[in-house]
Amino acid sequence: MKRKLFILILMIQPFFLLSQEKKFDIGIQIGPGLKKIIREKIPGIDNPLGINYSGGVFWGYSFSEKYSLVVNSLFINKGSLYKSHSVDPIGGITGKININRNLSYIEVPLMFRYKSGGAESFFINLGVFGSYLLKDMEVTTGDNIQKYTYDYSEYDNKVDYGVSGGFGIIEKCSSKLKYFIEIRADLGLHEMNKDTSHNNSDSKTFSTNLFFGLMF
Image (tube, rainbow, N blue to C red; front, side):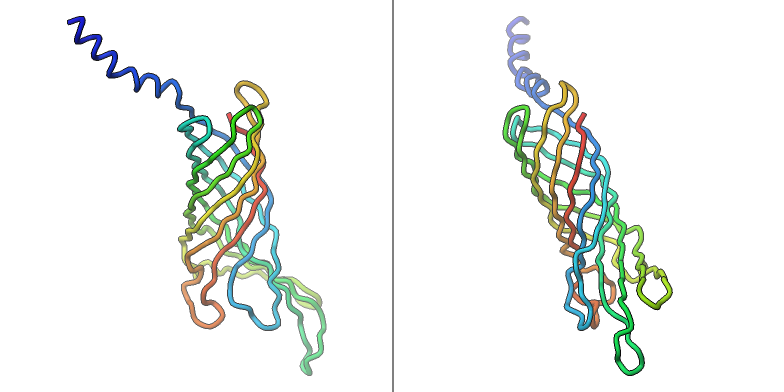
């Protein structure tokens, strides 16, 4: 009986040690960023980077001091900014036009993280994301024109997916609290539009964000 008990203890000891070493993190993050729809060039229209925002929660599981798995649940604003101009009947420029397209997603990135050791750690994230479109609103403003808003949601594919990566630092505030700063970029790999004819073809989302977060 004692021998069997000793063997049982030897068998479960690795699992006990593993449960002692594993660590879960949970936290919140929020931040501004830049957005762009990567697509074919449209003559007469500039497509600079626009401003976006995102925020949400995350969960992390540490396999060791340096390697972990991170899962986010984010509300993220993607889209693009277009700049053009209005013209009169004979082709003269009468003013500027700004078109701000805002695609609101719920996004779930799944990333592996490598970090250096110590109270202040540098880290790198790399993984994939999947997202679901909530709304696609386009707001047009400009000189000598009335502001108007149009809902493009019905013309979009609801699901997007792609690759995600970033880097940053984590610093310990106390025994139970850490803060981090991360720069992260997302590149969509799925066609945005249901209609892929003409100028709608081969349109992909791109965004980069500066996240500020707390880990508990």
